[in-house]
Length: 347
Ligand code: 13P
Ligand code: SF4
Image 1 (cartoon, rainbow, N blue to C red):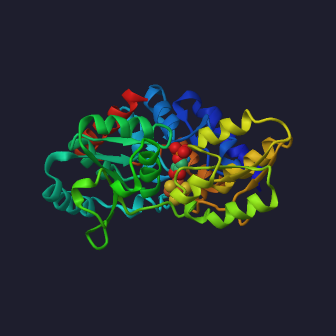
Image 2: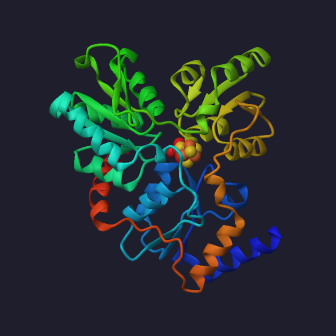
């Protein structure tokens, strides 16, 4: 039963004390978040892992790229575990290192030394490493504007991997025109752009989040018709059209902050992952909160981390086992850390 499993988690936590650290992303299920030592957005969790020097075992309740980041930012003898190895990210899977190297070769042939690569943290360690080695940095949804501004201080144009939407929304907010942004298609190895290439300022990798693509212009129109007083609050992984029609957009911690500080009685339609939306509904009974898409959108990979996997992972650690350890090789980690450090210094 759930109670029995919860008791087993508590027992391992009590036995290992501060040798064990459990960071949990805001999209995790309640059954997991209740045991997290810290809940946060991608940036906060990376910062917390970097600061934690005493935990020997970091059980990352989130997805694979987050666990890789934690491994890169912690000391060699601190081990990072992912309770279910199938907890990947469909967006991170939309850019592999071979596609990236091919794209870079073609793009630098066109644009020479005028491009700086940036990658959303939702990417593999190999891509972070590539970006670090080429002078660029990582970004998260909390600091994307600062990082893109920084990048334009270095070079004339940027290549933004792998989320076209976060890249487009961020550049647009900084005044880059939609007609100055091109899309790089990693399947056809072609640039999707109509005008003269010299006018391109932002090269957007053709990737997206399979959860946030489910929030549509139609959803916003329906909400505006049914609840004219309702405010629409979305994550910037939503498309440009959706973000443009929303009232507010920002990272998961931004969304939580807005709701926590909202007036009692205020009404909100939220466009982000289901577990977070449901938690906000439950924690704020004084506010009228709904999912922007009435069908509720789960992140299937975040949801792979559940109580049985957590119990198994923790008990294996207690018994001295080394399953599900996430280890980035030293060569990859070196430049990936450079890309992450450039971001953390500016955050
Ligand atoms: P943030 O928590 O940084 O907003 O990230 C959202 C997300 O989709 C993580 O995969
Ligand atoms: Fe990846 Fe989207 Fe899931 Fe975040 S919500 S882990 S970006 S698939």
